[in-house]
Length: 219
Image (cartoon, rainbow, N blue to C red; front, side, top):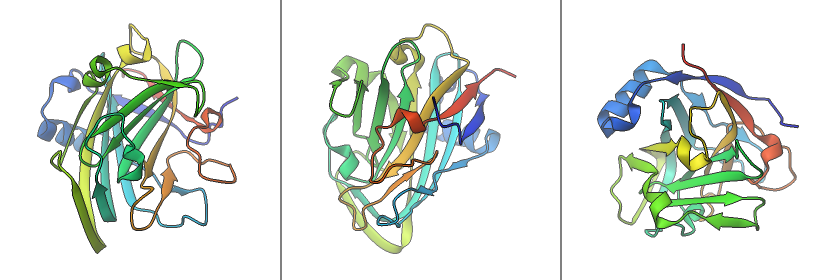
């Protein structure tokens, strides 16, 4: 059973996968309402960056726009499938819509990507270079190491487009079970916030039983 604390309808924007970064940000900002990633699930990690997430879909992709304000923007991992969760990192976990398990997509603030199909935290297979290349990601920061601190907060944004074909689908699904996260294991103040709440005793994003639901219905 899924914990459906969060369930939303996602806006259809045709051919969004063909748009530039600026056009994608404008279309998502103007045509969709942001979801806040604001669940602080573990009191010992009380710091919560401001994270807005705008979602849309086309016939081919799920499009995500993360807009983040945080006091420490850390981007140290340059290689794909590296430990990007240690940096300023945004994530999307999606239940496999055709089989067992789930997918995790993790991208740090400078665009380094990690993606895998998992049956659990420890039982997984990383995406190949070819599959990773199909995930389109682009943002406000260049792909070079960065380490910026400002108590008032610094802003950065990232667009991520996940092809439905990478989820084993030939057509647009009517819904997906998923959760969205912001973390930073090695940031000045480590944090682990989510879109849909997680009721576990310690930080763990690998918990499909707490995924929410997004509806992808053309209107």
